[in-house]
Amino acid sequence: MTKRVLLAKPRGYCAGVDRAVVTVEKALETYGAPVYVRKEIVHNKHVVETLTERGAIFVDEADEVPEGALVVFSAHGVSPAVHEEAASRQLRTIDATCPLVTKVHQEAKRFARDDYDILLIGHEGHEEVEGTAGEAPEHVQLVDTAEDAAKVTVRDPSKVVWLSQTTLSVDETMVRVNQLKGRFPELQDPPSDDICYATQNRQVAVKAMAPECDLVIVVGSQNSSNSKRLVEVALQAGANASYLVDYAREVDEAWLDGVETVGVTSGASVPDILVMDVLSWLADRGYGEVQEVTTANEKVAFALPRELRKALKDNDLQDSVR
Ligand code: 10D
Ligand code: SF4
Image 1 (cartoon, rainbow, N blue to C red):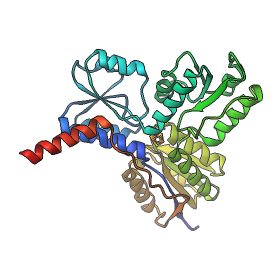
Image 2 (image 1 turned 90 degrees about the horizontal axis):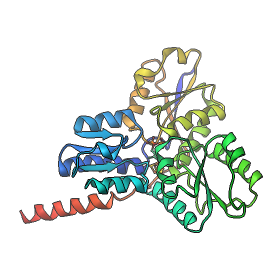
Image 3 (image 1 turned 135 degrees about the horizontal axis):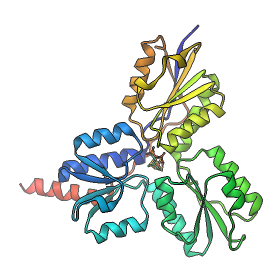
Image 4 (image 1 turned 60 degrees about the horizontal axis):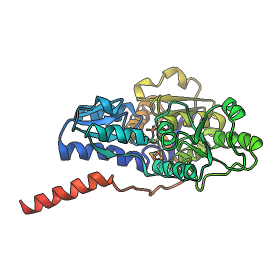
């Protein structure tokens, strides 16, 4: 039996996650602890635990933040109501919403202004869809399940558009869109892809390696939508088994019974150190040969949030006159 590992590339951190995590780190350096963060900055246990150790305080809502304190909004985005709540409590805010989530917010606002019915495909209860829907609650209806798509009603079938969460399965979303188009033939597509480049690229990479894999290990947290989708995509693309783990210690030895090829990948919110830990866990069990399966080279990077850039610049100026 030749044991080997296929390692997907791209995997792990996307540009929006990197920006959000660096935002909290720089906020801690610039303003000192505590820095409050509304919701998990990204959906990863390790990231949240590490930032907590450095002085970040994660809260569920802005009303848990003391008046006048500094709060960072997570990468998944917030609705205007959350901005209003923060302003009414005189909170200082840094918005770490990923620019690609903001793009979907802008689309929602634009179609609402033109009085469209907006069918937002996404997962009920996920922070991102709560933020996007909150931009235009009177115009947006969430479509999660096939049942939702079969039941949703619109005011004027010639004025309907679909938008989506950024981290969905590309294939499943198209199934949902086609179902909706069966009911509303004039349903308009978003002006550009809402499922972001990082989500798409990670799914393409896992699809390329999955047919050769007896097992695919996806590193990521249970509340991470894009990480969970990678498990589903791996199984649909032909992997015999696939599991989501936060840490190497969660990999079950029994999963390796009769396994020759193990695929490894990680969600967009996962630091690569956690993937390296899984690789060394596998190497200790005879899976030391690692081949990278590369389907794209990503070069996307986003500037830090404006509020933070300004503070960092002011700091530099102060340092230079000292
Ligand atoms: O659950 P999720 O996939 O939306 O979020 P996660 O924090 O795991 O990954 C980054 C994706 C973001 C911030 C939404 F675009
Ligand atoms: Fe932005 Fe996409 Fe990353 Fe979400 S997954 S933070 S939309 S780049």
